[in-house]
Structures are given as structure tokens and as C-alpha cells.
Amino acid sequence: MKKQFKNRLEAIDWMAEFAENEGQFEVLREQLEFNFIYTGTLFLDIGEKPAEVVWLGQKETPKRL
Image 1 (spheres, rainbow, N blue to C red):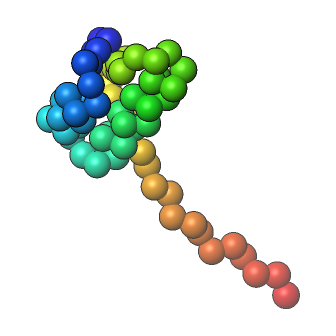
Image 2 (tube, rainbow, N blue to C red):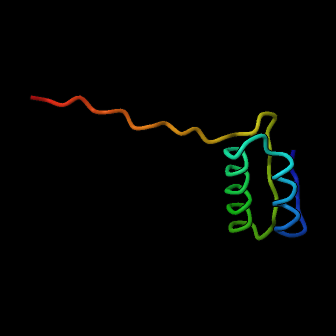
């Protein structure tokens, strides 16, 4: 699904309603910025399952003696 917007406020409002969590919102926001920088238009290209950010904490590395 490709969703186009007239301005940033419309895009942010739509993303806030659409996103299920903060991670999805951030992915949408980054895609919106990327698309605007490279095409000059505000749009999102959303697949069937929206992407989201996963935070993987740092594991302790084994210490060598």
C-alpha cells in the first residue's frame, strides 16, 4: 500500500494512528524522511506486515585469562 500526504502534520497524524507501537512509528518516520529526501514527496510504501525496530541488548563478552 502506498500512502501519500499533503504535509508532514498529516503524515505524522496518520502514522500515530496506524502504528501499533513506538518501534513501528520510528520505522515509518524514517521511511517518510528517506522518501522525502530522495524524491521530494511525502509518502510511505507499506507492505502487508509493517516493519519494526528490535533492540538487542549487548551481551557480555567472555573474558580471557
